[in-house]
Image (cartoon, rainbow, N blue to C red; front, side, top):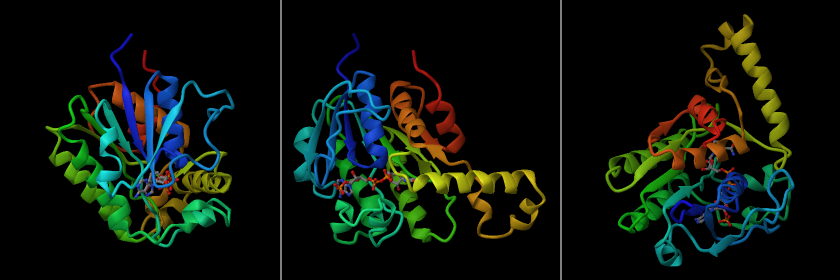
Amino acid sequence: MSAARKLFVVGGSGFLGQAICHSALARGWEVLSLSRHGAPGKALTRDPSGKPAAGCIRWIQGDALKPESFQEHLPGCTAVVHTVGVLMENNYKSMVNMGATSRASRQPPTTYEQANRDTALSVARAARGVQGLDTFVYISASDVLPLISARYISTKREAENDLLAHRDAMRPIILRPGFMFSSVRPVSLPIAAGVSLYNTLYHRTPAGCLLKHTPFAKAASPALRREVVASAVVNAIEDRRVSGVLEIADIERIGNTSVP
Ligand SMILES: NC(=O)c1ccc[n+]([C@@H]2O[C@H](COP(=O)([O-])OP(=O)(O)OC[C@H]3O[C@@H](n4cnc5c(N)ncnc54)[C@H](OP(=O)(O)O)[C@@H]3O)[C@@H](O)[C@H]2O)c1
């Protein structure tokens, strides 16, 4: 039996966070989740395939921007995964979740700087120096989305740079996924199908040449299944050789590798 492995997932109640919690639980990790609401609306008792979850997640209600609300839970943890981030500053989650009752829609507006950068720096500062906590995973993003504010990516890169600069204190693992999809977020499925069609047009037809010099050129990157990204997170933590920035192709490769 391996030494105690305890994962602290910041945003474990979110779209990707839930899949990361399940992936880690299935691999025998003890899992804590931090979010402002604590447990998600529908507490997780089943994994994404519908099977009963392998263990229990400890739901902590707190704010990543307020260390006093979570730092007592860090001792004993061996890795942190940070998944907080906003794509748009005006609570677009109420639209993508297709629910007027979405709890995210009731949050006050958050800036890119606060959500994408400051929450990560706040948790990383609190985590540095905690004995045995040696890995920090940051869910960043690939610069593939056209028409989104440049600050979405620049604030992600600022957080990445801080984590890389402190690599002596904690091993930084930075994932830069493109668009992620899953049936649990139904609106993501037609978008993923559109991304796939666009990739075919771009890479395999003459239309690609016409698109090359438009803002849409960068969108020609594969969408990723949420579960593949979650699996890449856990695989990367467990493989001590993995460190630094993981681009879309790296995430696909590591996420589809089963670790013995
Ligand atoms: N979805 C995509 O296609 C995609 C693509 C590329 C990159 N990404 C990145 O992947 C990450 C995860 O995305 P997602 O779609 O899973 O996001 P999400 O569903 O919005 O989940 C965000 C999570 O963070 C929590 N949270 C927000 N603010 C917080 C705070 N101040 N303190 C503690 N917890 C907080 C939320 O819960 P509460 O509201 O209860 O706090 C929720 O659990 C983000 O960084 C995003 O930028 C996403």
